[in-house]
Image 1 (cartoon, rainbow, N blue to C red):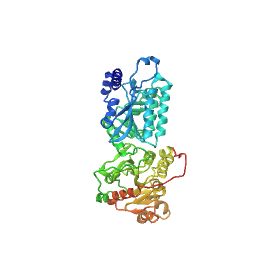
Image 2: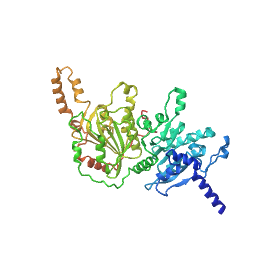
Image 3: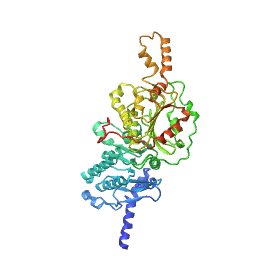
Image 4: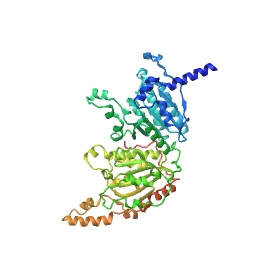
Length: 510
């Protein structure tokens, strides 16, 4: 018995040491935490329950039989974040560069299976050199097994990927299939092929950072949803996100006691929209003023800035917000904004998170580039996402809602539940100037005629009352009461049930 205990303690000590002091020091020198330090930072104190600490790789080729580490190159287990159960794996770069072996993949698959059984989120901390070359096809098979688990878990439990080092080749596709990806500035990278391969094949000279760094993936490619200064800050942002999300697709949107539970009028909102219809304003101000504690968790902040998406609480209830941003491209819908919002809407629908949409959209962005790159199909993604969503959908039109973009932005016609408009709302096929140029092209003789017709059109159509008279707008509300009206609508829609025709799955225009 005592001998077994000694062996046990020895193996535990070996596992906790990872690849040894020299490699741990090298990890710290790069400004990075170790796999276990990351787990300790992420989870509530003393909540981590480790699985498969004694698992070792099983290959003997290339001298690998003499190089074995307890736990291999990944730490797996369960723990709590603010009391909520999560499952986590953390790749250990100090052991074989965090490379994925058959045993490594099996450990990840095991905790994903457990997470699916009990309905708990999975958080993957990625810091890996990719497939373990020494294991050949067995390593590739391991990746395939992980990919399959990602697909089965999609829409059932939240999956979050945290990139904290290199992530290349097949290793990028598991994070790509998860719900959110967070990166660390300067120390994390994602690419299918690295700079050396790119140079060999295409003769392009590019750095790791330019090719697949945090800035690239948060502002250009939209692969990542956020990037933060260091390991600790990144993990704390993950904790904030987990706190906002349900654990699985059977839970309703979380309702949590917050400090700010005030539904009194906010008179500052009455002057948010400028009198000049061409003058922009910051839609973020509106979002922060209707949520609890002014605490907004924005997703993909640096990509497609003409669209805002993220999470906040209203009277303690988690809500997904989608909003046009008039400060950028006048809030127009373009390819990037449509894709960004569509994915967010579908995530919220998967996990029963109500959607609040703020609309100020003059239309879809015109241009040859937009058309040639598929604005038709990409714009349809957002239309499709809103149309299929069965969660509570509340829409507030603050100013412009023109053309097809009005329909796309969670209109009543796409099964919107509660559709409000501010008195400043303009709902029309297009703006006054464009409309009169078409309607009165043979009657306008000079600039004065144009001004007169524009004024007439504005008075008649640049208001929310025609749409209201048709029942497309449920009420025209005072801006000051927006938070209270949203809170009431969310309460009323709490037990909403809406079914769709039976289907194996849909066929969203990808």
